Length: 325
Image 1 (cartoon, rainbow, N blue to C red):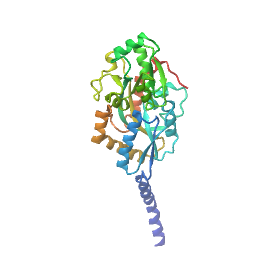
Image 2: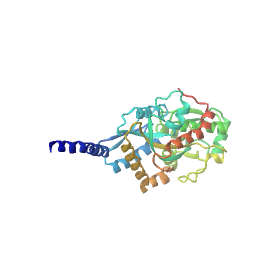
Image 3: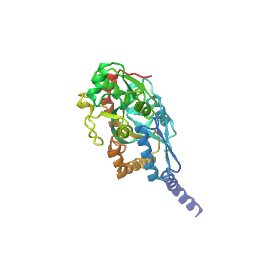
Image 4: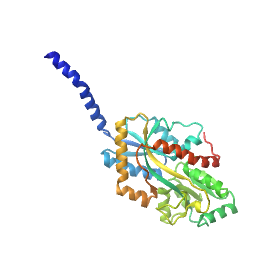
């Protein structure tokens, strides 16, 4: 009997371990989750990070707290995400900068976007919006081009940092419109707005979520969107391509986790993101308020999307002549 009991216990042990393991995995998240936004507060990346963290907090029952880690075109925060312990308690926003542009712009990156970070889901597709200071004597893209050509190197455009989509949107505009405007890099889009409204800098190509509210409030003039067609969120603002043929420069946001994060955690997070994006409140904010399009959620097709996005942005990177170290 004693030998039989030991045999039964031995056979049961793997099941107990499996049950315990499953219980442990299912318990995630059991504490606060840190969410790295690799740009300064106040920009579109910050807005989307906070909205998504609010939804994930409600769905998963633990606080998802945004930490802004701006600088170096998003590289500082993204590198911190890549180096984090892969236990599900450090996640972060990944973007067109971290995964599409920076690999083409920097000779050395402090992370490998294809090996160090798992793309869990895209959460938004978006155009940038060209906004100018209210005092600038230009009310459309054609007038802006004429103004810049009349006085070369007098006018400036701000960005959230060298090599970001905001910067390259401006460089592509310079190339295709044939104008000379001075690039003024900041450590994030948020800090630009005070200077832009005051006229310290003259214009900025900014993500729709951060720029559009200022345009709607009359604090800035919105002259054009960087998508091929007008945005559903602001159909009264022309596409820059209507004046500058061939001009297109679009962006995206996603959520990533450090490589090696356990599959059950990734699956649970992926499911929660999908549920968050189905929320009518979020859909309204995305479509009506922020000018965002909603891509198919999840990991499926993520890597293929990034590979294609790099091909689409390659001409803009080449046209800019920008190379960063």
